[in-house]
Image (cartoon, rainbow, N blue to C red; front, side):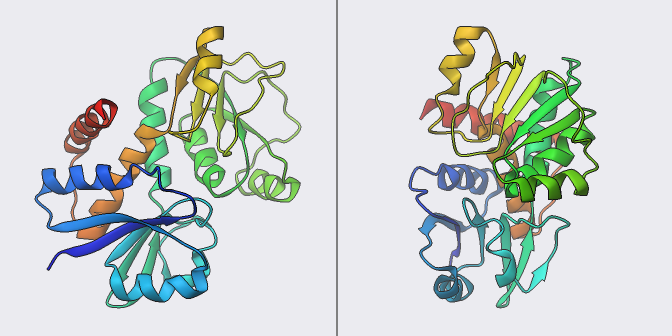
Amino acid sequence: MKKRYCVIGKNIGYSLSPQIHEMIYREWNINAEYDIREIGDLREDIHILRSEYSGFNVTKPLKREIVPFVDVLCSDFDSINTVVNSGGKLMGYNTDYYGFRMDMGEKIRNDGYGTALVLGSGGAAETVVPALKSLGLSVRIESRNSDTKAELEELFGIDKKATFSPEVIVNCTPEDFSLNSYAPKFIYELRYAGSNMLALCASRGIRYSDGLGMLVYQAIAADEIFFGMRRSHEEKKRLYEKIIAGIREI
């Protein structure tokens, strides 16, 4: 009998997660199936997830909402995107940090960028900020939510008085944004669908990346956790490149 996995969220019918995980299953000879499950009320749906699925990924807007429903939090972050069902006990993990750091690190490895502006202060930003800092960038945050912004600044030791013209902008919000007076060299959009920023970047000669690479890397890491596997960096890099090429052809 095939094990069942899914991604949960709200209004996520566009998700590429099923295609990505199915590609991983084929490469790793895993007998499992993966689908999308729209969530109405977590209090009601968590019982179905616990009884019917061996694990699930979590996307917008539930990465923080899911935390109180897991039995064991196996993450230093207050947001999780990967949940393993271990005999009815839900174990929560975060593979977004790994996914973003891997993808972003490869995209800026030889560019010498030193400053980054993070837009948003939700669950996604919580993993993006430390990843950028680990890559050697100075970080500043802009957010409409002053409370969560202040929390992230304190948590990650960000000098909120520091001012700079960011070389990199990372959008962790579900909306397009205005550059205003900024003149970045590179924009990374966590969304991989629904953004209009590519056209703006093309018109201004700004490098641009969507979040597809992050999605693929975090999916690979999630499946390592789901199935108790460990693959080398080289194996994961080859699989990442194969999946990206396959998705771009769809």
